[in-house]
Image (cartoon, rainbow, N blue to C red; front, side):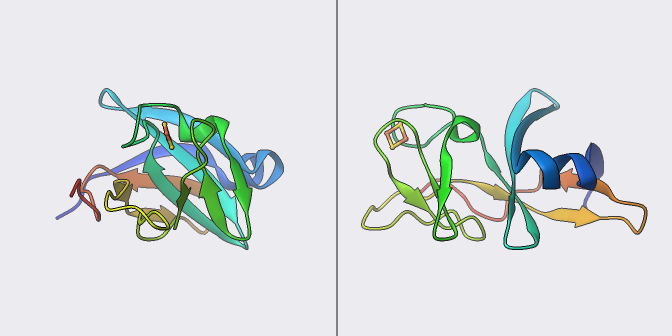
Length: 108
Ligand code: FES
């Protein structure tokens, strides 16, 4: 069973569109994209730049390092064989965003 960690308020994330939070020593990039919250490992699987400093383009998270484009739901990168870890997210009725460190995607 997942252990959930409260990490942000939805209204803050809606305003900022992205942020980085740390849970249990793991830094997670949160994104607000097309009405949904996504959580990905902040450290890029390519060369360790921070995805939370990247951009969102056409629904994809673009790493500021070398512009790999990640699907925020699966962590898959366009045209690459590596996958960014992603984490489960839930939003409570009162707008609290929680994540679980139980990874949905793993390094390949
Ligand atoms: S460090 Fe992310 S694409 Fe290179």
